[in-house]
Amino acid sequence: MSISETTQDDKMTACFAEAKVIALVGASPKDVRPSYQVMDYLLTQGFTVIPVNPGMAGQEILGQHCYAQLADIPHNIDIVDVFRQSEACLPLANEAIAVNAKCFWMQIGVINEAARQLAETAGLTVVEDKCTKIEHERLFAKRA
Image 1 (cartoon, rainbow, N blue to C red):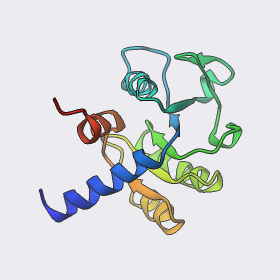
Image 2: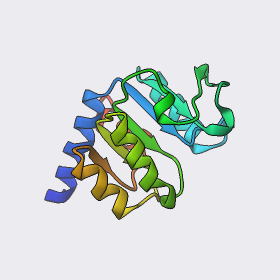
Image 3: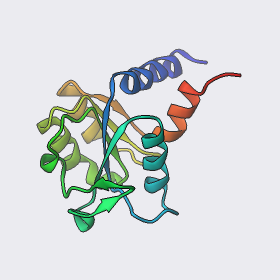
Image 4: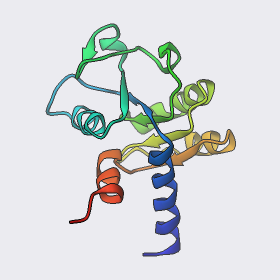
């Protein structure tokens, strides 16, 4: 494993270890969607997962109340987990900063240098182009 991979693993491990509440932006009520599957997994791992989807605001996904935007969530947010197109990340990084999130996590295929720089400059840990479910399973799976 290279030094950069070790550093990335350390960063992701710290995000998970310190997190209790994850806001999942782009949550879907459709069980075939990756965001639904990731949300389901994270709930089974003991995280409080709050879905964020303007079209579903006020409804429930996996039994969790859905909000239109991060600012509407009445809890402290540790990780903002982004299931949106890369172009949507800069305003989401601003929202994550405004709600004092600790980690800004962009899912597989989601990369936005400006959002990364903005969030890092504000003191957030940033993960790009990685799946929270895959990485959590890899880093925290119980070894037999």
